[in-house]
Length: 146
Ligand SMILES: Nc1ncnc2c1ncn2[C@@H]1O[C@H](COP(=O)(O)OP(=O)(O)O)[C@@H](O)[C@H]1O
Ligand SMILES: [Mg+2]
Figure 1 (cartoon, helix red, strand yellow):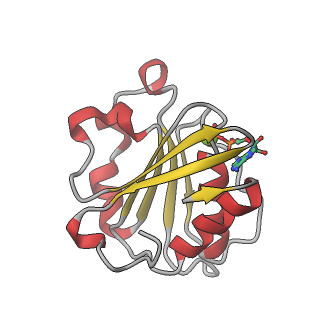
Figure 2 (cartoon, protein in one colour):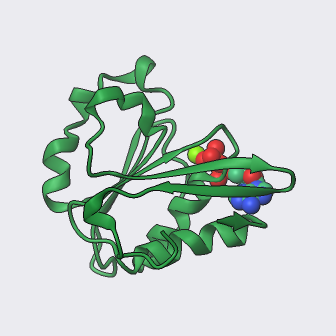
């Protein structure tokens, strides 16, 4: 899927928010500046959150669990995982039980990334971005553009 500008990337996240449920994992990959945070922002806003959605890169995790959010979600950025924590310390298995997880730099989890995660890769192409999804069986048919 071609994303011409940041608004298109946010809108793709917003579309995904309509079909997301507790326990879902969305793994975002792509280089710095690819639009991972923009995609996550659209998704979190699409769930009903109306405040700022900053990058979680300095604290690793920002939870969004508010009455106006349809599905509580953890926004996670593992870019600085090595410096700040081990992935085991983040308690993501437990978090999945009652949250959706949206994970930037999810590839840093290595083999600990769940096989049922929806993988969304963003690549820089000229002035826009190219979204490629790897869709596990449990996600098939849930998002029309997948
Ligand atoms: N098509 C696009 N989609 C997303 N971001 C874009 C796009 N074109 C340009 N940009 C710019 O690229 C940057 C993406 O930043 P961000 O979402 O923080 O990326 P990441 O989290 O992958 O590092 C922003 O400055 C945004 O304005
Ligand atoms: Mg980011």
